[in-house]
Image (cartoon, rainbow, N blue to C red; front, side):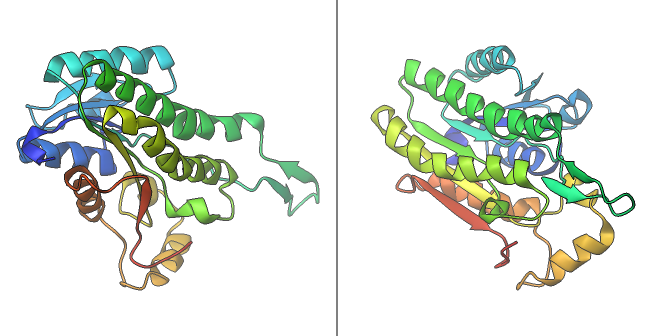
Length: 247
């Protein structure tokens, strides 16, 4: 698929990678429907981008957004399910001061699963359903992570991102009948507002372990997304874009 023919939904588009993906598609002549809870961030996108507030944690909101997006763009052929959050913490830990054994709360675990897995999956579900109704071929691109291999302090995040990578295979098998591909993208350390909020010492230690010697950029990830859109024989797989590092 040529970028000029893209009619894409991009979630989590108010900042970071999602913002960059939406901008790059628009620059290439494609159409984009950008969604995020952060309306101020969405407003910073180019004028030609379709923008609307979106809470991926709400199935009704995702359904309404998808219909609006397809109507606004005159179709839909790409879904980039990018919205995500972090609520890191050990699943079970010993308090350093009291010695008390503490656990990650249900709310902390479920907050991440609700957005990063359930929400991300609903975005794919509604997007594919709309594409199928319109008989449009295309590709869904869920954003996984190299953390899917396992990372200390991220039981919730790892659970969600591992599931999205596995479902790239599931969805390739399920959606092939509609002419729709599924390709997950798994970023490593990337310069985004999310990673900028990390503890500096921990961040520096992680960057030092990256063989290419630097943190990734949204443009690095865009090149993977672009390949997933353009290469119509790429399907049912996850592309790691991590500079050679494994968490």
